[in-house]
Image 1: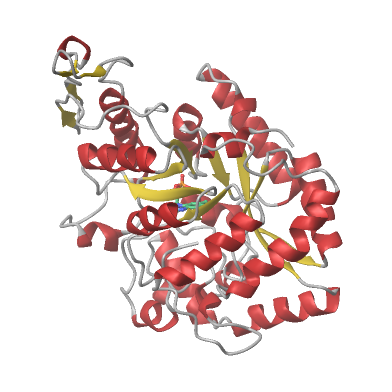
Image 2: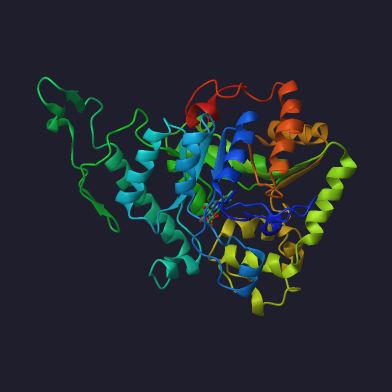
Length: 423
Ligand SMILES: Cc1cc2nc3c(=O)[nH]c(=O)nc-3n(C[C@H](O)[C@H](O)[C@H](O)COP(=O)(O)O)c2cc1C
């Protein structure tokens, strides 16, 4: 989700059943959704983020990832009121000074007792750069090179205290042993930080790290740093190819791929009957105007599509933004046109759409994982009304539990334990 009227599906702020306007900007709305998800045993509430939008009239009109409020503030609030579920929060390596990001996340790791993850993004929109006083973003691959160095700087800060450095010895009036608190003295090409770090190490030292890059450079970055992966591979064949490729990359980095959960983008729509689910799905697809889709594609791809002939093949389009979300279409079919992409881009067509009864959706999810690999799904809500989440918890979760494919929820307490415990 995003701390916004909608996330990936821009008109998800419109309720398909009753025309209720939900108050997504209020804490009670989020508290109720997080409580519902916790009731269903979800590992986490993942908050994506974007620091741009509102660059065109259509982005404002349809709420194309705009407006977006600060997800860190929301997670701080929610983690105090909803006690078990984990949270993943998105922060940008391009726009946050490394020391403040490392400090905020370490503080959150303490406050949540390890229930927080960081979705590492290097950002993709020129509009974001302009909001932060830059004329332009660094080029696509260089963003990842910089992010790589940024992570090294974070590790240097997070590891600058030895485990037993904080003694809090009242008798000797010694808070910390200075010989065990070190400077980071990190000097890179783009980032520099001295330390010592100002946050005492938590038992985990750092948040759980997620990454969602889909391009070649993105995947090599993820294989090096991520504790967990968000992938948009669609269907069993793409999923299997992604898993095999990722496993090889992780092994080249000396890491065990089995220990790194992969969560696939999905957009399930579950209802008591198949006809009802189909009807809702059709309603959602038909409500999205072409120009809203195009506005979102422009924003994601960081390309002004307004002068592009939408009936021409996209094969010669150069995409500097989210390459991965473009390539899942262009690589599957080089002749695909913008109009064809736009028809499904916002209704879940770019992620695994599971539409049907609890049995049908559970069948599909189960067979996708068995044949495609990976560990689970991240769910993009088709609409942001509380009923959407209640349907998942009341209809789908019991069916998955019956099959023994959901682990016991919250047998541990940290996000890492939620994500890595066995079914
Ligand atoms: C499932 C998913 C979630 C993402 N969430 C965010 C996000 O919250 N904020 C953001 O700036 N980018 C987000 N991205 C974009 C990626 O982090 C990355 O910047 C983008 O995919 C460009 O990298 P690529 O060209 O390697 O795919 C997301 C991508 C995917 C696939």
